[in-house]
Length: 477
Ligand code: 4AD
Ligand code: MG
Image (cartoon, rainbow, N blue to C red):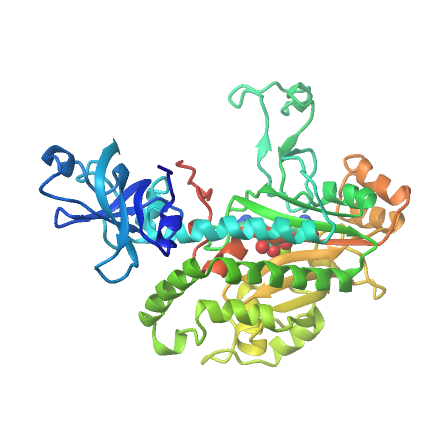
């Protein structure tokens, strides 16, 4: 007898005299119907127990959450909702589950409650679907780059540099926090540290990826990144996964083309391969929408939103044009934004981004050519001397999903910028070397993986699209 997954069994067209399956009990009804799930699909297989001929002691142990090994005959189902079911001939209890204390009861739980039980929440349909989609998206990303001639590069997790220059880093040290060695000035002496200098968890693999682009041509990273920004929002994590392609001889226009093609391709992949889970999440979202006032309801379903992205061009708009649009807009009843932009050079708040994407253009937007003073040191300065070749992609319901740029490839200009921002040349000597030895135009971007998963699943909180979220005051698991 061959062990099969629930997914394999449910797709059987024919009956089979003997099948075998292992999984966890979702429900056990009327001492007769076990709904068994093994994670291979959203759906459960119904296992029909012969009540009279089954040991009472075993029946008592078929409780929600218990792990079972079931053998039986796969037959056409009499009930509705499934084509096949198993007439059980033997049940082995692999692991008991105390029905009184098992947190995942067969009822609707709040996402807050499930977050507190993140170790068990993938036993629910919603989290099973979300995490299967997360896995698929991750595969689609590798597939896209593999098919387009990119090499997968592993950027270091522990680094000595601050790629974004934002100072939002988690320090890595093996010094005794309570009693660190001090230097003559009374400061912590990091020369005594394991690495002999200050180090931190990476905020971005970009600078290292640039070194590989300037030798292997087309590369990408896909790894964990860490930011100690104390923003307790539904879109920020302290530990998140980022995809960072970096390409030699590619300018900003090429970067936008790549990002758009890439985003469309990975979303098309899940539309094609994760239909069942998407339809389930779509239904969940529609139920949620019904609880909102009419005016706030989305006029598109989840699947329609995903299709829309794959079928329509992203709107490309310069920062300067966007500011003009915002200045001339009256977004709500009070006819103004909470943060009014009246000065060229100000950074956009998320309310501005959402207005542009959701109200004005009603499609994904690529904003480019930002003021130099609000962007990182490594971005290519434009001829106007005040804007840089930066681009952000804004998605409906998400806001910024991608941030990227053409990089400053001119040694002297880069040095000037670093000086202005007080960035030590000695710290980044290796980065400057790229501009000394065969420098060339190159570009790349970073996609926040969890923001993509939020978009593709319709989940509203970033804590619900990563297995064990890390946020301020929270690293329970
Ligand atoms: O815009 P960011 O900071 O850009 C960079 O890090 C560049 N080095 C990327 C590059 O050009 N190679 O971050 C890129 C993306 C954001 O657009 C956002 O989607 C995501 O990373 N992101 C976060 N996601 C979750 N939690 C956070 N705290 C995030 N910070 C950024
Ligand atoms: Mg950004």
